[in-house]
Image (cartoon, rainbow, N blue to C red; front, side):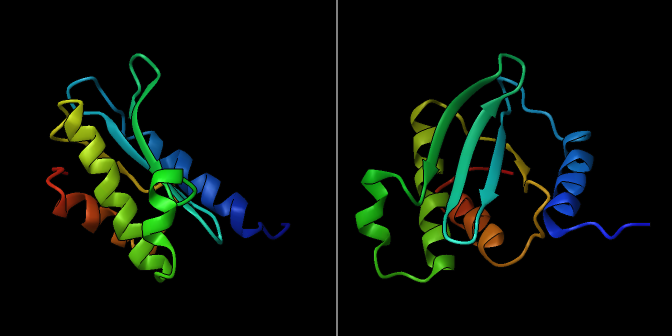
Length: 121
């Protein structure tokens, strides 16, 4: 059997997570993607297929704030920003989709930042 690479393994884990996690208009899905350099978060209504709020480390408004911070601190900042944007649209509660990534490091920092800003999950 051929050995799978890391990205294929993550995609398999993400498929497994997505079988259970589904965003509704009342409780949308907070989806996280991280690359080596950046981190992205979206609040998604899976019923309509719409992104309701988003934030990322390449966001022009957040780039200046994130300058010079460690990646985990940047992730916390992105979590707070996406939570504030979601709350601005009347979203209080979400389901967390870690995107097949382990719940540690930057993914956990983003989740903690979102919780600090008042998002419930």
